[in-house]
Picture (tube, helix red, strand yellow):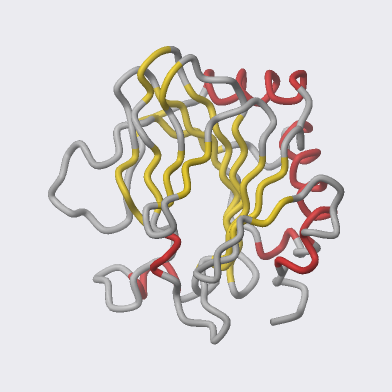
Length: 210
């Protein structure tokens, strides 16, 4: 898959320090120290000032499925603009294919139970969320702080646990090589046991956003 809205594991591993998780089931990559502590703190401050209760696209009847708080980051903010440009340089994806960037905050006991980032093709809200820009393609997630205890991201299908670490980037392709969604991307934002967790998530789409 090539084009202005695409990246690939092959491209990403050309970045110094980028590591691919050795699994044939999904493309999952990790890069430590993608952002400096100073950059992370600036983004944490933005999230802390503008957060609201998180939501999910398809309600599943579990009121405790996602208990974090979310911040819709201002695309005109210079710190957000800088991060968007830095991600584009890393992954080669035209920012026009990016959803509005989001920040999340997790307090003690908060989590996001096992889920996938793509929209279920047969889900009730698929047309609503995907009619214009299409399905989600790549996810880029950044840890903005060290967490005293808990808060790891667990990829259950491949039994991979990724611990929070300030400035660490995770990236994964939500699709299989043939373009179908990949259920092996199922992941769980595990409960924070001590302290708090700040993350930023950037999702990309098949077509330009909006």
